[in-house]
Image (tube, rainbow, N blue to C red; front, side, top):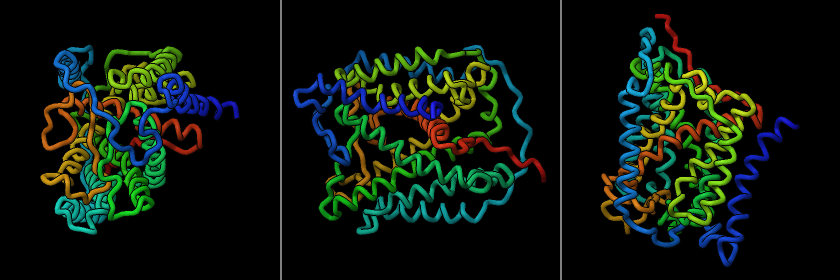
Length: 381
């Protein structure tokens, strides 16, 4: 029980701390719009700020250089893994691809009533197609073929994981919101059900992208021999809790704490308990798990954003996708390229991918299931 408690109390504190801060931050002791589900638009953000935009751009350019030229940052070249024979694309690839194409057409074509329900079948079709690609490139080894239970559990964790972030969204006054969340054509109960089903897709999609990137020879070991960076778990947790408390009082300048605060807290406790995670690998100089799952989230994010945008444009007033979302990101909410996400906002997908994996590992420690998503390629011809 003491071991499980060590994984329970940090989460309980993550949930309680924003409420404690809100008691002092707001006259009504809760942020406006709290508890309305799906989250709705609350109030305008502070608007564009050139200095903040340039500062964020500079940070992102440095990180881009880090990804493209790791040798500049102390990484040593690593030989790519031996080539893996290819298998034929499995039947579920074609089934998934068909689902993705058909339901994307229904969603973008505003074909009612099918468009109301297209989001989740589209994404599960895409997940199956990604898994089929991994299966082919790994000579018959993928999450679905070799670890179906892990993939199924990731869908279950995904629901509760994303609900956690919807809860945090209230405390940054609607960093994202769902303008179609009150469609008159659907009952509130149906909309809630559609949202919960949609939440099952987040974790599996990122894990599938991660395993797909691992099949790319130039990426598989690219960041595995870098600077050794042991991280202080205690300080990470303390910094995370302080930032979450401050976020409630400063929701616009600290909106990014929604992702970074829980990430450093959960990762800090995993380090303290000597549980393997993308962050513990840094102590051995292996940055590959952390950076590849970050890139997996970023690549998936492009599909999230483009497909979301196409479900509402060019006529956003014609509401057919209840899962459609819009961002109110302070200071940098400019340069939208076929997406509601501003260009610089894509950077947020990088830590989100790491957070997804950390939450999964955390849940595995708490409930006792296997969280290993690494695949051993089949090298036999």
